[in-house]
Structures are given as C-alpha cells and as structure tokens.
Length: 364
Image 1: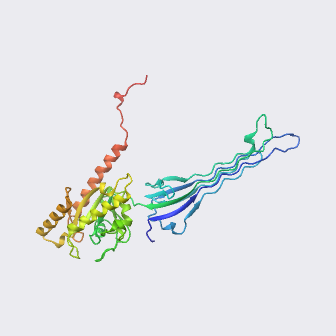
Image 2: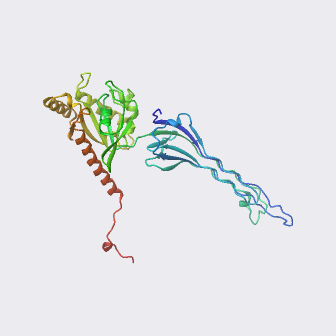
C-alpha cells in the first residue's frame, strides 16, 4: 500500500430533526390539546485512532463523511430518533487541523482514542413545548439546527521513541536493519528511502523501543528541495534524535560540512513551523558517526574531532559501523537506558503526590 501521510477530508454532522405540529384528536376527548413531539438531535462526527493503520491512503478517494440527521418529531408527543454518529477511523498519531481557522481540533496519540470533530445539530421543538395557560392551542414549532461542517487537514505523525536524521546515504536505513527486524530498502545510491519506516529495537523480552527512519535531508530541504522536509513532522513526537553522519561520503564531501548543513536545515524548518510547540532543535540529539569500518583508528579520531569542532558539540559521540555491527550494541543499550529514565521522569511528573496517612490533616 502506498504511504500517505497527508489528506484533506470534509466532515458534516447531521442536522437536527424538526419539531412536530400536532393536536390530540380522539373520540370523546374534546379539546385534546397539542401533542407535537420534539425532533431528534443530529449525529456527531468522531475521529477514532486505530493502531492497526499506518497510512492515510484510505482517504485518497473517500474524502466526505457525514452523520445522519435526526428524525422529525411526531404526534402523540413522540420524539424523533437521534441521528447515527459517523466514526472516521484514522491511524494512531494523526493530527487534525481545521483549514478555515487553523485550529488543531484533534491529536490522537493512543489506540481507541475518540475525539468529536463536528457537532450534530440541536433538535427542533414541537408545539407541545409552547402551550401555556393563555395559549391552549399553540401552532409554534422550531426547526432543528444545521450540523457543523468542517474541512480538515489530516497529518500523520509516526509515534516513535528515536528518530534518525541525516544526509542521504548516511546509513540510517542500514542502522534500522542492523538493530531491528525491519527491512527498509538499502542501496549504494541516494534517496533509497522514499517514505518513513519504523523498526522495533528489542534489548530484552520486556525492554524495547521504536526507531523511525525518514528520507535524507539535502541542502535547501527546508524550502522544499528533496524529500526529507516532507517527513520531518514524523520526528516531532520522538524523544531522542540521532544525527547520523557518513564519515566517508562516496562523493568526497566533507563530513563536518554535511553535518552543519543538516543542522542549518533543521533551524530553517523550525523557524517556519514554530508556533509555541517544541521544535526539532529543542529535542535531545545524539551524534552518531557511521561507516568507521572504512577508517583506521587515527583517521576515525581526525573525522570525529573535525565534526565535533564544526558543530561545537558537547554531548557524547558514538562511532558505529552498520556493516560490521561495531558500536551498535553500545549505542542501542545507551538509548534504552536514556529512554527508560525519560519515561520514569514523565510517569513521576504525571502521578499525583500521595500524602502519608499520618501527615494528613483530619477533617473538621
């Protein structure tokens, strides 16, 4: 199935049913009075997250979704039936934005999460509602209100713990293949990765994390050159970014200069999308130098020093080879430990403090 991470859909909630104009007419019951019932409410439209989906390809053709309207009221004070809701199933990690207002109306991050994106119309009132001591035969009714209609931009942002960043042919897909069971395409030419891919890195049976690979960045990516800029949104949910650098580019370019270009593209991208949210440059980034099997010890250290100096880097630097596997085990274990500490800190922050019983103030 083709990978699609953007789609535009139109959602329309159901209209409310109209109130009924009716009077009780039965033998031996003169002046029975009004008995027109209310209409039913219109159905709502919901987005529902499903972890079994990983693309928005289903919305290439099905772009309009509409809930049913409420039934009109009936005589004998019968209320019209409520309209059926419309459930739009989307992949987990989908963000929905109202195109008219720019408002983010939904961010579905967990399986089964359900968010209302279009409100159904309110029911109309039957003439029974208008009877009073001075108006015994009301002929007033109200019509149901129209359901909400919205045009939504859907964006899929993959849920991953670690994101890979770098120039084409830096070895990002090779790293995913080395440390996980995923099999992204690998070849000796640029842009073999045309869409994001995920791999689950298992340390032990109960310890694992998800790694995301996106197409490589090139100069001008922030302005739309190449493919990487289209998929940078998938790195927005990651906890750690790995900046993968090829220490022996096949085109003979300087690894340090290539690393600087990637950082510059990140800064330009963040300046375009920043609206108070956490940007990619704010995320924790690790430096990973790949293909060290092609260099001797002295050359490795020279490349390492040039890259660290060019980036003014202060964090640890990892040297790996995705071909021989050198350094990859050390890298993934360090990632696992760091992620576990981040998860523990997050859980502690979201768990309310419990006051010991002996310290609690007795009720007065």
